Amino acid sequence: MKHISQDELILHFYGEGGNGVPEHIARCSECRANFEQLSRTLSAIAFPEPPSRKEDYGAEVWSRIRHKLPERPRVIRWWSVPSRRWATAACVAVLIASAFVAGRYTNRPSARTLDTANNAQLPQKVLVVALGDYLDRSEMLLVEVAHANRPEDLDLNMQRRNATELIANNRLYRQTAQRVGDAGTDALLDQLERVLVELAHTPQGASAADIQQLRQEIESGGLLFKVRVAQVHMKAQAESGNPVRTAGDQSPIL
Amino acid sequence: MESLDAAAVALVRAGDRDAFRPIVERYSAMLFRLAYRITGNEADADDIVQETFLRAYRKLDSFDGRSSVSTWLFRIATNCSLDLLDRRKTQPQLLASDPEEREGTPEERVPSEQPNPERMAYSAEMQASIQAALQSLTSVERTAFVLRHIEGRSVQEIAAALNVRDGSARHSVFRAVEKMRRILAPAMRPVG
Image 1 (tube, each protein chain N blue to C red):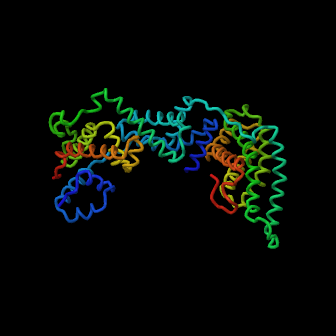
Image 2: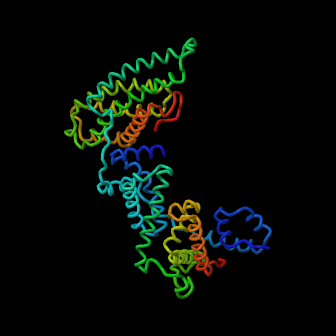
Image 3: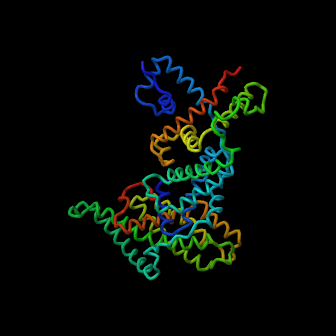
């Protein structure tokens, strides 16, 4: 009888053995003894657990390496060009209104000639265009607050006004997101709104602790990062002209 | 999680250096454990974690997205660990030579610090023997063994991490197991 090699027994121990090995071991006492001895030895080899690391170990590593990371050339986002922002915002308002009308129209049973699939995606296309600009403005505001150490670092009058304006837009976009079933965008806008509301209600004579509280709000939920991720999605969709998801798709954007 | 990683990579490529932070925060602990198991040294493992992210950032343009970011980082960390083990070859107190060149049995080489009770002594002796056996492995064998035995990686994954063919990775594991068995054989006695 041809016996199983040591190498095959090793692979079998690690679950990568070939076909027929277990059957052979079951009927061959010599191979069985070899395998049992191998198993005893390998099972006895345990490594001590690695020393634990603090919960913020990742943040520690980041602070140690950040200054060593070379700058990369920044790619300018098409919607961040100031002269286009307000034009985009105006177009967005018109598009959103059109989208709601289009949505109602396509729901009528008599509209058989319409390309219903295409029209079903229209509100989401609108959302994509609108959010690109909206998230860009939100990001700028969040960055300003996130980088402020003291109240003097902020122009609170201006930032409160911007936050108030963004809150008003936020609700409109959330309605659209809910309408197209985009739960991920809805959740992001919800999180964003809570921070914006807090910023809008920050008193003029805010203390350093108040600013710190705001910064923590932004950092704790990874809000800034999520906004940036969403911007990447929006940009990709805007450039391709094809929504990543179709209307009614419940998968989150993030 | 993978879409978050992919988005972060896209942001970094677009010039947003800070977008790399979530990746660092998410995978540092996992890479530390891997590096510690390969090198057996806490400070080295910390260094390897940093080096891994620095290399990853510099090579970000070569990341093609066919594997996940975590797999990619795992491969870089494995290579960083391997580089460090290779550098350590100049430090004989940390890397032992072939077991045949040593004198005496594992028990004689590694004194047990806890003679009583017998089971504790056996355990300490076994651990010391394991350490001695590990030090007898080459850097590639040790890495392959840790990845297979502790990390539960397949031969294919080990081959990809070490940038060798499957057959080479498989033989590294075989050689490592054989050496370990030979050195541990005297310690594998029944406990009274």
